[in-house]
Image 1: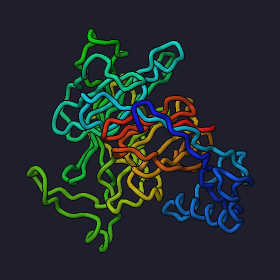
Image 2: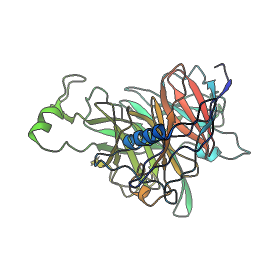
Image 3: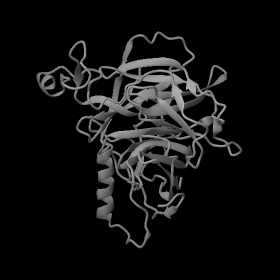
Image 4: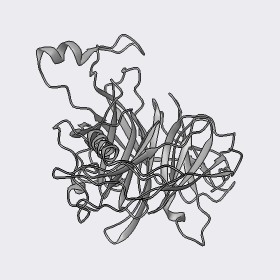
Length: 379
């Protein structure tokens, strides 16, 4: 599509998630000229959705509280695509600055560049993808910039606003620890901004070692043969070593790993009491992530974000966007416990690399070809 061009989509109901005692089925009627699906096809669709939601224990996530066998439909109403400023090189992620989330305020979005072995580069853009001022340089050296998260919350009777940058790219398996950096830039206004951003807090973490077994020793770890020459041989789990998606809920950071086989995503929790950049914690040690659940995503996760009202999580692969309900009791311990729907990533010139919520019913997908695609949902 051209710049700003909109293309309507047929109202596609999302796949339903089966509960242990039954499943939801599509309501009657003809959509987009297609005949009503048969009972058999509807049953197969529900079974496939349940299979996609299976964790390693083999149990499907429960339906959200109060939904039982009849869940409110969510469908894609409209998709529109516009181009991001061409001066942004190798875009890696996008997040909305929640301080500008008001009708009478100019909306600002942060885009990170896929910087490797240099200072992370951020760009502030407006709703049309135009750069506000010039690039921002984070005052540290990273290995591989991936996701960015904006945290906007009250804490101890005052507001906290900061950005979490994930230095977590590790596709060559030559890193034995990953890092996140926390920064607190002001709201971008233009050329007069301070474009050098200091790191307020640095947190290092690693994935847990694979389960000890003869088979695991043969297939789940190996000595790194590539990359910079290390002082010692690095042993790394083959399954989890890389992540391009992180989220923050309340005071907890969650990381979604890219599994080696590429057909699933594993969720991990960072075991810290707080991720506030204003807390003087001892972050010299490397924290070990806690495994939560494996999710059959079909492809590696490449982005995630929590909705502006805090009620939903969007988890994206290059092919699919999954929606999870965060309002249930189970979600406090596992954000992907309640899968409520999924739909395909809109077709575009580039590959999807980042996702952010614009409001409670609208998402924006960023591609590596400098495209911003806005997705409007029915509910």
